[in-house]
Amino acid sequence: MGLVTTIRCDGHGCSAEKRVANHWWVVSMQMSNDGVPVLMVTPLKDKDSLDPIQSSLYLCGEECVLKTVSKFMTPHGDPLRMTEMG
Image 1 (spheres, helix red, strand yellow):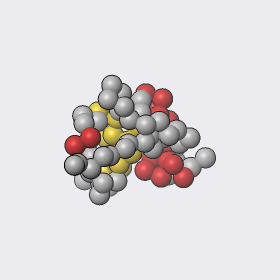
Image 2 (cartoon, one colour):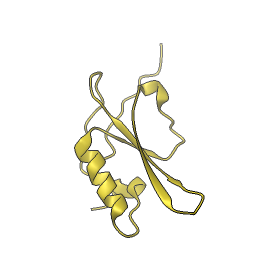
Image 3 (cartoon, helix red, strand yellow):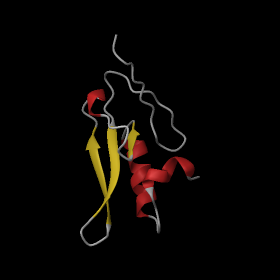
Image 4 (tube, rainbow, N blue to C red):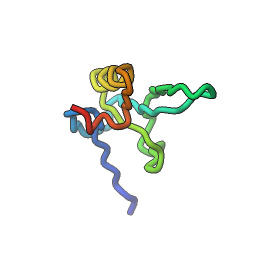
């Protein structure tokens, strides 16, 4: 029997659960060669692409993605700590 993975939205104040038909997004932050943080937003293809070691947020849709991008755009914003922010 395989391992069952439940994905919940990492968006602030959201706890939506991933369903089969949902279109979810993965948000991660990397540093450019110039030391500038770069926010990467990509579609979540399937549960098999989950990487528990990678620092990423799994977001349930446009609203949670936009909130995360907004946090990133604020001075000293770190979207990967979004769940800890008010």
